[in-house]
Image: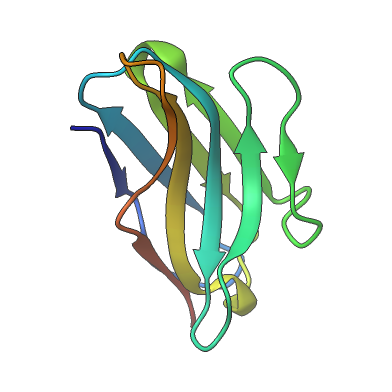
Length: 120
């Protein structure tokens, strides 16, 4: 069974930084694109950033220049470094990964979410 487990959320003051991590575990063949989404209270889940297994990263306009997505393929882990955080970044952040299973199916998995609160 494949699982995505996030960590690194918390409470931070405006202008501060946080680093989120998401590790994939279980039995699978490979991981394609890994991404982060977020959902603020009363709003729909929105795209934040994505990183394919090889190629260019992609960011939402609202986080460009402040957030950096990276991955460690040896650890099956994706990271989100968040700098210059703003109150409007407050949300539950979710990890997403397109994972190819050993039976050759590719399925999109979601993590359980980690809360990020930006407040003074």
